[in-house]
Length: 204
Image 1 (spheres, rainbow, N blue to C red):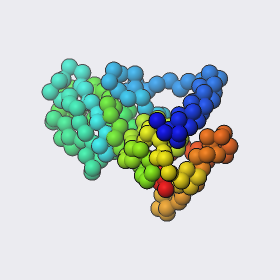
Image 2: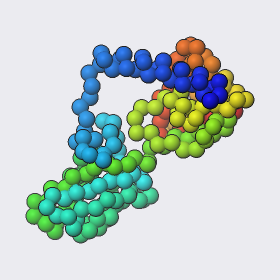
Image 3: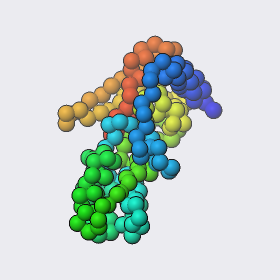
Image 4: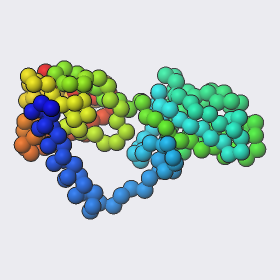
């Protein structure tokens, strides 16, 4: 374990302690129906289905229409009888309503359940002087520091003061600076921003 890895682990633990303390005060949001189902992932309240997400569509008393499906790049899923259905951009509840409307053409009183098994559409990327560069799915709020920990920590000669988060906002590229040493010393904590899908963290 490098000194950077140890430092990241310590800083992440400090941030986690603060989050846990806040969680003891703040009321917990009720989980969605999909998240409370076995094998489902926990979903944020604003989650929308995206390409490459894996769903389980289960029709009560109709196994032939039930299936595990992966959302295609065009945002559609394919199911027996109903064929292609738009899924991307919808919440699981909205997709369920769409499936009810489509299935009514073929069966009486359809009762589908939409379960999100795997989220692959919400990814962030990290590159440069990091132990495990690549793409990482984010299924819960994730900060820059947490991503650094997920990616195995900084390499020995990384320029930890000059990390940049690249983001596209309103169609234009934007960069945010992140100084690891400051955050590790619990200074400039505001720079430890929450990442958004599509963000790229560059470690020079």
